[in-house]
Image 1 (cartoon, one colour):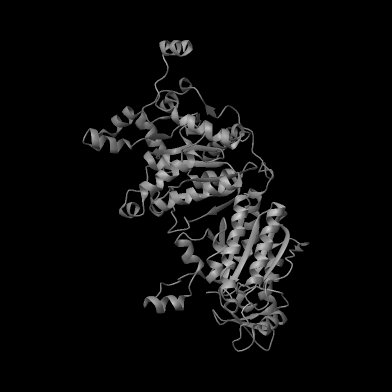
Image 2 (cartoon, rainbow, N blue to C red; image 1 turned 120 degrees about the vertical axis):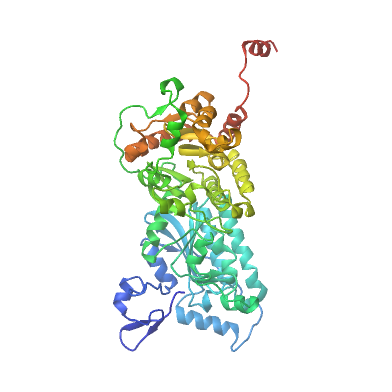
Length: 569
């Protein structure tokens, strides 16, 4: 929970979370975050705008702000008097302040809510301001960022307040249709009608540490269900663990994080220049099978599984500038076996994702050995849909023995999640480049590999089943795994011969683990070359070619006689 501050008669504040006294100027320098316990104390809407937006922002004008008193509502005082008191107290016209400006140089519209104004409640006036800000973003063709703080709908406006949920949701739908990035910054608290409308409909949901987000408040839930709620219930950390938000970011990092996201969403195709990349000698991609040596498939399997082989996280660290990792399937959980997010690949805005194994026993266990759950595939699907919305290419890095085969995975629809990814990728209207960097195992690999170009690392493998699994089924013993690997033709040379792979990315002598930075560099060269071929194509042409590519898999090659008959016809 975000603690309140108690002001004393001296220039000190007492943190209600840790009960420590904090010198006011020190607290202000620390962005109103307690230096002792880290509690993020509430900011006003103007303070949020000062923190996030570059100087020179202009207000968004919305015209008349809703009906003053649609119900003639009176509780302890008439509603108009309550509104006027809130305006005197805060100096604001409503519970939202909206501006046009820039964040780290990137154009944006920002709407910041203020909890001081009737608990940040959503009424006709606040709804009108949110809708007007979204309309301004739509007209300017720029992203929309919303900082939320609300107790929910404004009761004094009755059903008029309720309908603001639909109005604001509709406004965000229009931004979706226009392909404009939307981002929520969740602060404490964000409840009720705000949580169940625009706050959770954005492409990316970031939250401050400890911020609470939910439809019903914890007291109402506890009394309704008659149960003790879990520790940290509805906090940002709880929501992140349950796949409902993308990340928890300290206040001091929020502006920089937004800047990275806006860099990828910028309408310029190339983005800003990426980091300098040293020139490498030689061609990193092999396209002819006879240019690769014939090797024992089992030897390649061992190299593909080498613990020191660069992982998805390693490659992203080497290749992607300004990477922002996104989490969760927005429904039931997050999956650590798949890592994904947005960033710049040598200046090219991309959405990147891949399987993550790890280099130690602890990391392998934490990442489930790179075997993704349904939540992981649904997370990747969410990121691919975001790529399609923004018109950004997708890069996938495949390294998994297969999808997770557990009971929970089946209960949550593993087969359905994989099937939906295959269908989604077949029609995604942006370029997709996939690279098998280690193991490419079964449907768990294919769920990230329905692509326009498939690259395979020189010491990677790609197969319908693991050699051990094949040996156990057909030879009744896993000891025959080397024989099965050879029979399955899992190595890169065979994949080129079959026409499954478009290119093989060379590795340093002895394997990628011998020089991970060089291996990543060659992979980056190959990815960029493939993207540069695909980016000029129209969405319709991309989809047409991708579908034709997969239709051709397994077709018998035409004989001389069939070609003659075709020509005659």
